[in-house]
Length: 243
Ligand code: URA
Image 1 (cartoon, protein in one colour):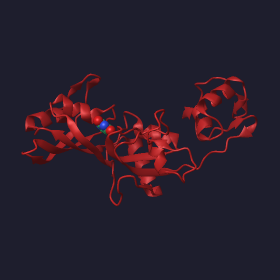
Image 2 (cartoon, rainbow, N blue to C red):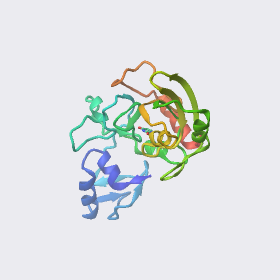
Image 3 (spheres, rainbow, N blue to C red):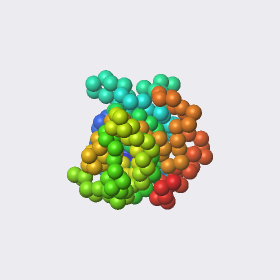
Image 4 (tube, rainbow, N blue to C red):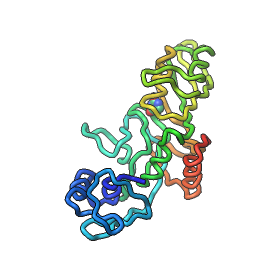
């Protein structure tokens, strides 16, 4: 279920703000009845009309992007920086990212116009396993990594258990490459976790999202998800499994 104004905005006929106005003005009907409450939730089987005209639902589309560093995970930016939807000039549907990667983080990002799909993947209960590879300052000891695995206290609470693997160390430069798997999606979580054990992240890349990886793509390239992949992601989100 999604908020009515969001459904109207996603159909492409109005911005979110304009959709709210249309609702307040009594110009929107759900299943034949005028609805003026902004919080109203509607699902795929509800019939929404604006000014007596049924909403043209966009065909849902699903993409996987290898986000480069230096790109905002949003559909627009007030400072005119590059945003992830700039990589889809041909796509007419109103796609947006499922969750976000930091400006300086590269890696796998899903984009879609399917709100229910996006919401279920991002639901805290259903969050899918995500694998990151971090280049960190210094060489973490087993004990530090174990703290991350058990869960570490951050300012917004203790993190859920994670998995870590020390992939390589550069003794002369005093840096290390660590793989970390988490299933939460808090803001700058991986960076804050490494910071908390005294090894700030120098470079961060999301390598995997559930069963999806970046094979065959270079930074800045995207592909459509196959119907089978979409189905498997739905199953993952709905069962709360991590893989
Ligand atoms: N954790 C981070 O710190 N940054 C990201 O972009 C994703 C996860």
